[in-house]
Length: 132
Image (cartoon, rainbow, N blue to C red):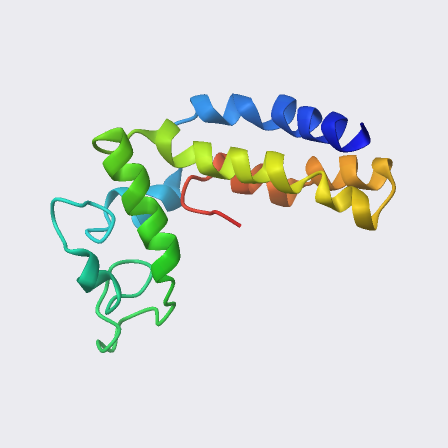
């Protein structure tokens, strides 16, 4: 019962983020990233680029390789038929709602509730380019 209450609390906290637009980081990591746009690049190219869409072999590459994250962005892009911020916020909101009750297994319910509303989780929900 406590796990359901914590999931409902996380939903109450973070569902408003679904109405937010793209943040500054989202424009760099999602909107202006050719790897996310399924009409601009192939899935195979994603394996050769960093998180920002630059070729890993180039000197100015960030060297941060996260192909599964980019594939999840590609899925959001394909599902929405473009760059709809809600489609990029929804997976993070669902993951937070799903994972928050698991904190209860390690902490008492007050600790799990505090964890659900932490600034870290708030940032993750406000920014569509993070799915942690």
